[in-house]
Image (cartoon, rainbow, N blue to C red; front, side, top):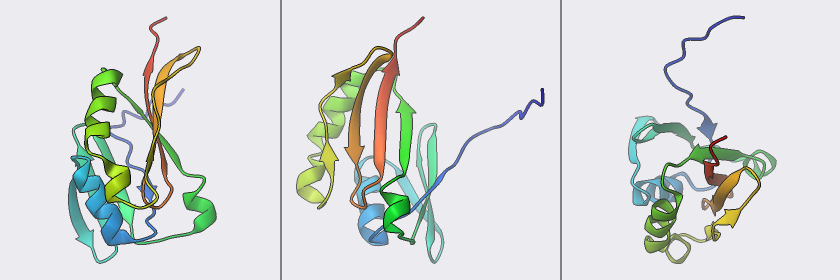
Length: 123
C-alpha cells in the first residue's frame, strides 16, 4: 500500500459573493489571505482551505466539509455567539445532534457550503 506522507489536505470551495464569503470566514476566526485575484487561503489552526471567486449552484449546494472538534460544546457556543445568521444572509447554524457515531452540528456559509462540526465517540 502506498504511503502518502501527506502534510495537509486543502480543499477548494466556491463563493457566491467572494467578498462576503471572505468576511464570513474572517468573522469565524480564519486568517483570510488573498493569494491571487480570485483566490484566498483561509487558515484557522489545522483547518486550511482555498476560497475561490467561483460559483456553480449545483457544486456549492453539494459541497460538504467535516471538521473533527475536540470540544464540540465550546465550539458550538463560540460560533453561536458570533451571531453569523444575523450578519450574513443565507447562513444557518443548527443545534448539536446526537448520532450513533458521536455528536455534530451544521453551519451553512453564505453561499450554501455545508460545514459539519463533529466529535466522534471513542471506540
